[in-house]
Image (tube, rainbow, N blue to C red):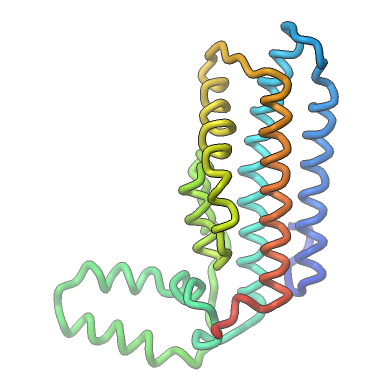
Length: 215
């Protein structure tokens, strides 16, 4: 992050800058792919899919981390925050609560949670977003849940993410002779670029409308 995401304008600038350089790289490679079938086309399509996945994973991780930092820097109390951010702050206590069967310890943990609702929340944002180097739709869904973004509009692209992009990228990474034609590549290219743009817009909209606050 070039600057801490203290304001919506800084958040927008950081996301726009990150999105921009990724699109430039992807566009440069896409424009190098010849329309005519042949070895050069095949090799560049493989490179294109690999780079497309790298930027898909990289941008989702970066943008989610930026938004978490933005929400953290708003300095809100626990009872002002949307529940997903309260969970992030309370993960350790929640995990301990689930492990113990002693009522006394359970009572102390619940009391601690309730007694702190008026205190400023310390929302963690570093090391929270884990793409697992395998950003399929399930992992993407989890990330959306963590940052409080509704992912319903993305559900129709589950197959494109899981099969057309991720499975294809994995096969390429394992050295398999994979054949994708030019139209296939252009289709998945446009889908993933649109998804990246949409998540950027959703995050910015959430910041502008203060969706991170509890209703």
